Length: 163
Image (cartoon, rainbow, N blue to C red; front, side, top):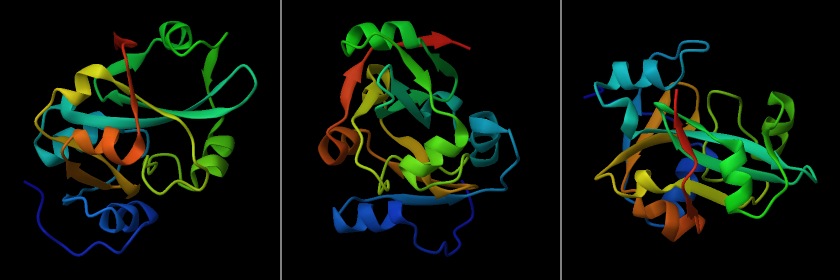
């Protein structure tokens, strides 16, 4: 378990508090390009329960958020088919940052600058607890997965592929 230390507010934690969401704080030593493997190792949790927040866009460059297990990738083809789009692709880092208001590596689905549709890999909703970015690099929050559907109106999808 990560040691308890005070972490300053982020738009994500403000959003969670405003919506009366119970969450635990998990700061860790951020590693550039370390991804969910590093955060899972640092926190001593299964990487499958660490959720990555991916900012993507459709063929019309409309942004959307995809929440995926840390140890899986998104099949953009399957996702596009399920949400009735021609194509889906990851946003360039500077575009993702503009839409979300967060630095890459610190992107949270909560408290984003722009309201975007959120899609969550169905298996995430079946987990007892998930760890998701709290709005800065090296900082995850532990929450019940139901928060994603309740607070973000996240739509379940089946688009995971093994890394």
